[in-house]
Image 1 (spheres, rainbow, N blue to C red):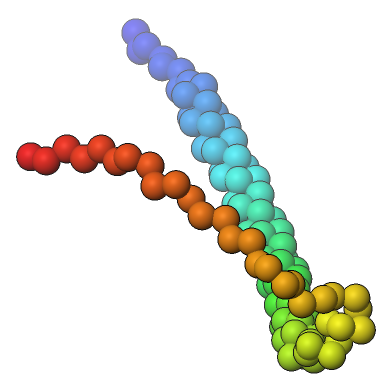
Image 2 (cartoon, rainbow, N blue to C red):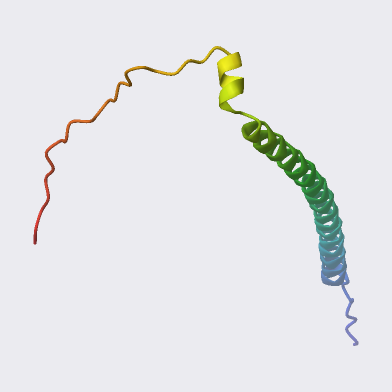
Length: 103
């Protein structure tokens, strides 16, 4: 007589759970990417603040160095105990032989 066919939804269920798992995995990866981006942005901003403060401190130290350098004179050197040298000693290098290859 008539044959009856059964409809199996096993492949559809497998496809549904596979796609659901892929969507969930994609969502987790997306959230991780957003978190990493925000973390890197905050870290970069903190580093920029540190660079700015270090640059300011360096400028202040350079200004202090220049002002101290300009305040040194012979009178200050004599007060600190420095003396003029009667016979200066110079150290000269002996010229070393050189080797060159001419082509």
